[in-house]
Length: 287
Image (cartoon, rainbow, N blue to C red):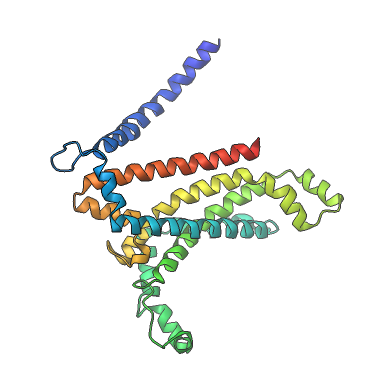
């Protein structure tokens, strides 16, 4: 009986495994192979491609900006999403509010980029509003700020990411909060625990599963901000928002496939280590 069940499971899983093998593992294996070869002659290059990328200023800049973006955005979005989800717990028409928060996900990326350009470029709406209110002189030397072409571009891009992805974070937090055992909360209240104590000692430990899911999804989505950055500022934006995706796009256009393959392998190893570390921390806490 057990063998029949195992066979049935294998039959159902086989198409999925086959698809992953053909369209994920095999292509990635070819990328690993190419990372040890030259792009033109396809001769063996050893680890030269890896040495090249780690001494490449564009790669180092892209890695620094991508890590900075991730470290800045994820904690802020996770914390902000939790605060909003807690505040929404007492709202009657929660479905309507959920739809409102998920609306940015339905917005086409090109539309968002056009709106951001209209608002934040040097002669955009933001500078016009600040000038009308007399705040430009108060903020600095009175000159309009090019938010897309200066260091402020990083915060514009971070705001875009948080605005677009906050909705699903709130929904995931709400799902976790609704799954917390109400009897435990009531028992803590009867024992004299205040709101902050109930949140810290009862609710938050039960939200670790939601936290793990949100952090992983947010981490992966933080590497998908390239479309907004590319549409707003092009292939070579301000140095503060030059991300790994810009680098890969420019290397692909220039046919630097050997360097690109090596960089992809390094990034894949980093993702793997990060997710395994999160999983280890989760298992450690659960144990």
